[in-house]
Length: 93
Image (tube, rainbow, N blue to C red):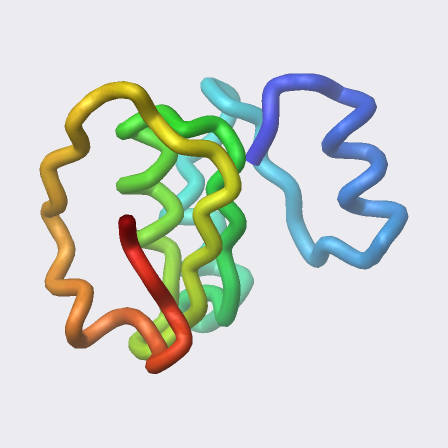
């Protein structure tokens, strides 16, 4: 997911099966379509925005790996049962 064309093109060049531009597509619908409803194995959250965190967590398959790169200065209220969604190496600080 990204908002800059160059970033989306770079993701495609390095092997992304699908890219979604913010505001131009429904991330969760596209993930379901490309994974047969399973969800993705790994997400990288790089914006630090609560909406981005929720989208990344919602796109994960059960026991998928969530990687938080950016840290939000705002409180993020979790809507996901992380015990059922993250693998043993995941951490949410």
